[in-house]
Image (cartoon, rainbow over all chains, first blue to last red; front, top):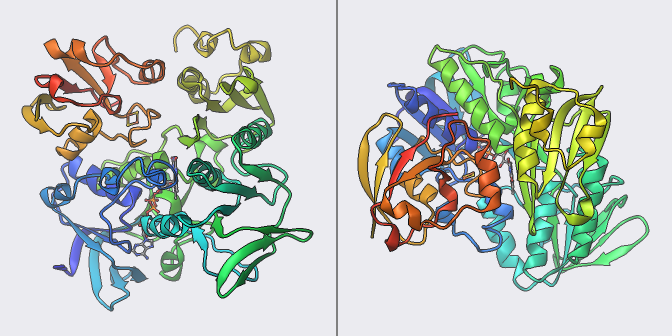
Length: 413
Length: 105
Ligand SMILES: Cc1cc2nc3c(=O)[nH]c(=O)nc-3n(C[C@H](O)[C@H](O)[C@H](O)COP(=O)(O)OP(=O)(O)OC[C@H]3O[C@@H](n4cnc5c(N)ncnc54)[C@H](O)[C@@H]3O)c2cc1C
Ligand code: FES
């Protein structure tokens, strides 16, 4: 590795947001030097397939690369992989790496994402416990899963559900445990939670809600069961999907305003001069949540916040205003989300969940703020405009799946 | 090898060799067309891999699935030549296909 000790733009994190910052800068004809420091050893790759096609062996790793390796050379983006940034001196505009090297910058982009939240109960460090955040995580998991027959998945969020679906497709007996009284409690409304619980059960996954795993039991350093307050569930592999912790400590220690992520303004600027943040680690005010400050964990958000940061660095700021969207694939179920359902006061079901093709429309004081569409691309595409325009169609029209959502738009939209 | 004629957003035309068995989206991405964002990685969930297809061989393409057709409605500048490049699997029979990358939406 040849390491220049100064870059005009230095990006920390070679994930979706870091890669897109560099891509967007070059697209916008940035001519200065660009360096990316990433602690994983791989070239920037797509994370979503880790719990889906890659997990299932349907896609090899090279097909996950966000750009081919040659791209970074051609665009003159220096990748410093396998290196971790450990501290920041914002006055001296310098980043320090774990190996002691220091790198100066003109502008810094913090795109360090998040790390999987670890189990903290007794037995947390036994062999056979796995996380699903990086390629290394999944490779280790898959190797260990080969001999496993009974898998406990802890956490009923998207990652847990996707991992459960994939493991079940690989022929494992899967039990999924969720502490809350429903799945996806943090990110979706009750009708979606109930649908996914039923859909997983129909496909052979045991879904248990309102169950708190308080201990992982093992012998000879290897898990053999998980335990709740009342029951013990035998298993030979544990997958933990209980959310992420934003990677923001370096910035916090460096003086940036940090609270559940690095605070950014509409242009991706942090509270420190010449320091920007994008992706999973950044917390900005969202016009799709009535101005509430939040962190969004999605490829769309990583990509679009990164593009916005690139524009700011180019001196042609374009405030971040992209409509949030997200997808999740589990078995043959394709979920597509548009908008943010945070703060909804009504979750209206459109169509029949029994058919496994339907939508949930989230309203706040009658206004459409988000849609979750299961195997229903039409509603997803047409509902997007309802969210963007903040429309308040009649409930009777919303629930009638014979009326295309586009018919609810005003004639000019 | 499958030869494709690709027009980028600046109007520059280039011929590229496409390996068999990959999608058109992956082929364009690997050939350095950074205009193809392909945010969902080919899951038919984002419509950021929109292209126009032309030429005699275009008629030999597999027809669109209902999902692709519905999702394309999310793309601005959709026309009768529009396709989502991640949904096109390349094979030797498609040599000569003309592709134009759709404008940014
Ligand atoms: C299994 C899985 C499935 C997912 N599925 C979907 C999906 O279907 N749809 C969707 O929209 N989103 C999905 N997501 C979420 C999506 O992948 C993330 O929102 C996205 O990766 C965020 O991009 P990022 O660049 O902010 O962070 P990351 O992609 O996490 O990249 C951050 C990088 O920075 C590195 N890093 C951290 N700290 C340092 C440091 N101090 N020094 C150097 N490097 C550092 C990290 O190791 C990492 O490589 C999924 C995520 C996972 C894990
Ligand atoms: S890559 Fe997302 S639809 Fe083609």
